Image 1 (cartoon, rainbow, N blue to C red):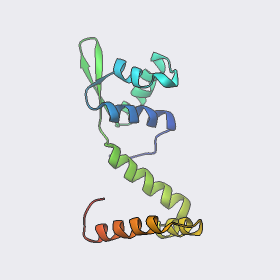
Image 2 (tube, rainbow, N blue to C red; image 1 turned 180 degrees about the horizontal axis):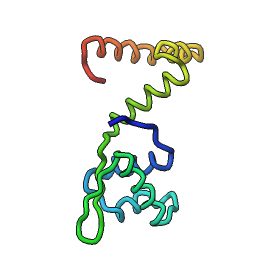
Image 3 (tube, rainbow, N blue to C red; image 1 turned 180 degrees about the vertical axis):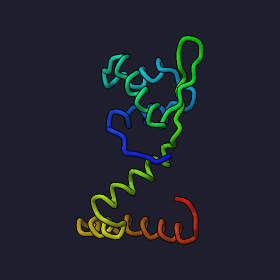
Image 4 (cartoon, helix red, strand yellow; image 1 turned 90 degrees about the vertical axis):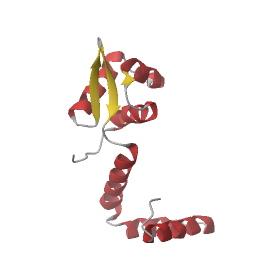
Length: 125
């Protein structure tokens, strides 16, 4: 599957689904999304779009659907982070250089160095 960047509203629905886990009912999602004040039809529209895009699977159970994420939070964040870094900065090096211009604290530098050592060993962060 080729990932595409999601609009903020669809990403909000995905976050609620990632937090809820597989086999989540629309009622559960509506409850998780209640602070946004979206109508039931709005949530349904976003779920349909996410299903069409291949981000969500809908499984019929009785008269309703259960929704499961087909793309993990980690995979999407890795894709989106890479896209943002390349789009705005051109490379990870330029991104870190931009951070450094604003001034990194010693602790932040040590965390970055530890992360780089971990990646050099082939370990996942």
